[in-house]
Length: 343
Ligand code: GTP
Image (cartoon, protein in one colour):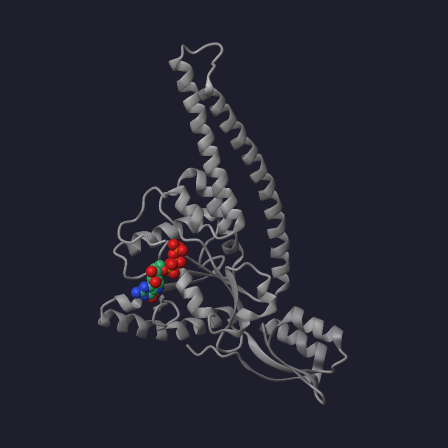
């Protein structure tokens, strides 16, 4: 949806419905809409009653029509509620399945039209992981991403934030943002060229707080100034240079031209790996139990199955885990060096 210029004040439920990307979101929006329709029907019923004197038998096709409409709406509401329960169960299962995917999740959030989807596609389009079977079963708004130093992550696109969301839509909105609550990094995409970019930022942060996330405190947070190409060349250069040098300023990118995406990916990696170290490990091909242990305790950056050497692994692990690797695998662990984080 292109909401150019002024910020929308009351979002149209139908527009939001079209934008709701998950099945749960769409059902929630329909439910909100039907509930609203039902309340309108009740109002017109009361109005009709008043017009006809208010009491007693109300005949005629008008009344019958209202009754029928009402019954249909109630039936549809009941059906949607059932469907929603089913969808929620499935999502729960999917989430558990995803938990078994040992990759951290980066969730893109931001005001509507900030460029999240464009960035999502730009970051994942060239990535072979996107075609990985593992991800084919996940939500279409999630895709695998391989960061420059080999770290794997899942990138998640979310629905755009809108100011003054109608009350009936808050539940739908929250449902579509469930991913955010579980993300390892919240990446806030901003339209740097928008006249109200600061107000939009404040809105987004307020919604996050309302959802119960404290960006930067309970969760890693990366701010991304997008649409760099629309800024004055001087401003572009300044933001890009600062972002390349420092981690505590917003990343600066153009999802459209691709500028700054390499720096952004490195920044994601450096936030995710923190002080992780890299280990090499050679396991015998028959050591299934050892291999399972490795996958539970570290992130496998590379795996080579070698006829002579067995399974050769490159791992990124937390320093505390590194000690456990050494005690479990002794001399099979080697060549330790910091995971690349050259920003
Ligand atoms: P919602 O789905 O509504 O939340 O929007 P979104 O944040 O996903 O934005 P989307 O990716 O749909 O982009 C909105 C508009 O901005 C589109 O017309 C994009 O082509 C445009 N856009 C996105 N990134 C850039 C950018 O870096 N530069 C320029 N000039 N335009 C961009």
